[in-house]
Length: 265
Image (cartoon, rainbow, N blue to C red; front, side):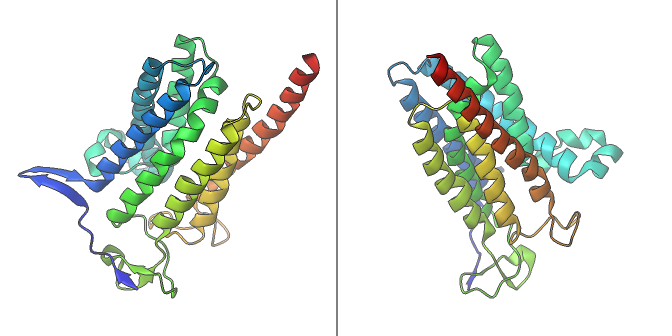
C-alpha cells in the first residue's frame, strides 16, 4: 500500500502554477504530431507535414471544447440547466473523453471538407495517434490524485488522501496501460498495413469502449451520479456502449466494402 503524496503542480512561479495534468496534455499532442509526421512522410501517404500540424492544432481545439461541453452535459446536466454560463467556467476544471471525441469528430469533418478528404480518411489516419494522448492524460490524472478507483485490499492499492484513508485501485494506471499502451500498440500494428476504409476507426471505437467499460468496474463512479442501473452501470459504461456498437458495425461494414473493392479490381 502506498499513500499518494505527489504534488500536482509541476512548476510554480509566483501566482503562475503549471499543473502536471496540463503538461501531460502537451506531451500527448506533441507525441501525436511526431507520430503523424512520421506517417505523413511515407511514400503515397497522401498527407503533408503542414496538414499534420493543422490537424493537431484543430484536434486540440476539439478535445478541449468538446471535452468541457461533454463534462458539463453528460455529468452535470442539472447544474448546466440551472446555470448555462457554467459551461464556460473552464478554470473550475472538468473534462470528458466522450465529449472530446465528439469534438474531434466534428473538427475532423470540417477539416476534411476543406482539404477534400472524407471523414473516415481523417479518422482512420488520426485514430492510431490518439492513444498516446490518452495515456499521457491518465498519467496526469494519477499525478493529480483524481479519478481514483474503488476501495480494494490488493497489495498495490493506493491511498488517495482526497478520497479518504482506505487503499483504492489506481484505476488511472489501469487506463494508462489499456487505453494508452495496449490500444496504441494494437492500432499502430493494425494500421501499418493497408486496411479497408473505416476499419481502423472501427477498431479504435471498439477497443476503447471495451477497455473503458472494463476499468469502470473498479473505478469510483462520480459521487453525484453513482450507478445508473443494476447497481453497477456507470455513466462511463453507458457512454462507451455506443462506441462498441458503432465500432463493430464499422469493422463489419469495412470488411464488406473491402471485399467488394477486391472483386471490382
